[in-house]
Length: 309
Image 1 (cartoon, helix red, strand yellow):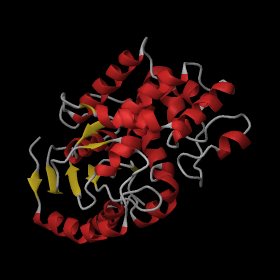
Image 2 (cartoon, one colour):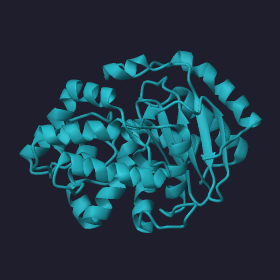
Image 3 (tube, one colour):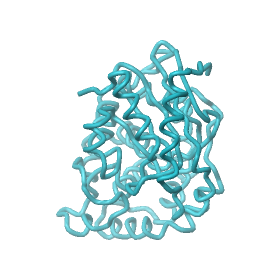
Image 4 (cartoon, one colour):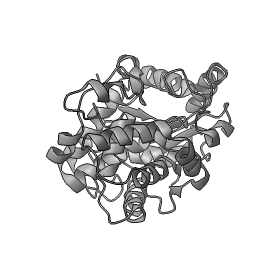
């Protein structure tokens, strides 16, 4: 993908980069603790194939929670809307993304939405395939198609690190298994989920995926409808209401772009009918969002009038 470097964007990246010292890299997953805190990159991908970028754009990072948007789209395509939302709710939560609290108090005991860990695990459980390998390959091929990059894969070291330390996610799985939300062996689901979260790309790939969602699920180059229009709409709506963890409301006011973040520092933005945005800055704020990435999006939103509201 040819991406033009933009001096104006470089200036915004350098200004936002100053905030990286105020954050911290995710260290609860040991393999993520080695990330370089100072890194920051951005790419914007437009439906006509134009692409502008700035910063450390060649740096690969793992999707982590950004993958939740993509597995939701695939699960909707596999199972249909009714089935998916019989098992997972559609409401935002003010709780941290890995909280178990609402699972215990909700009746029926189903996760509140697909963007928190419990909901994402339930969604990954819905991906069709006979084995973990089959399901992972289907997901990878789907993401390769969305990004236009056939070489995308997952980072084995990070997946292994997450599998080894993911006891809270195991707890969520066992709780949901008890209440009939999932019915496969917990270790199989954990294996698939940690590999899903460790799928790796750079911000150019991410911007192109964001553009597919921005174009209601249609590939900006071929025009092929990769995700049915209605499922792309659902995915973007969840990005607005729950995409930035429990900072989603403030983000909607300050930035106004449907977006999803991940704890490796990635943020995917999809500005409807306009462009896709990919950002990576591993230094996180206390909510788990890229501290410089959010600042960069705020500045871009203001400067280029990007808010959809």
